Image (cartoon, rainbow, N blue to C red; front, side):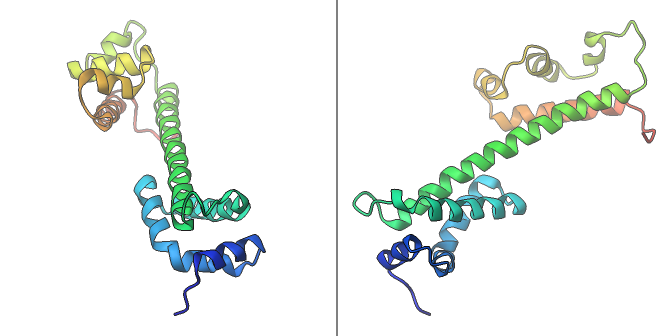
Length: 179
């Protein structure tokens, strides 16, 4: 198997030789894959899009590569890391929007709760901890990260409590009728 030197690879990219992309994948594919998968948690579609973005960014920004500062391997690894972090943020943002939309849409579609039932009566079906988390997150708008720090727990624990609480409320108040 023929391996290409970093200098030759960079020169190929600068000349816009498309074979350089195959060389990047052959030489650094394992490294890029490990970096990206660490952040996108094995979401295949996001992984593939992120890898494409990394290759495109390296292709488009090759003139900013400085061999005096870093090796090509370090440079492309940094691109992969920051692109993967961007994708991770996008995934989290999308999950948050889906979760918020899901509970809101389901509650609007639900048959109305008796008029005298208010938020406290609905939340009384949750444990004390779940109630506190729901109130802070949904009513007061406190970010989950801030709550996790305040409660000295992992942020994932907060999301877990929110998810289980939503599930519990859906089972109690939303009919199983097809919409």
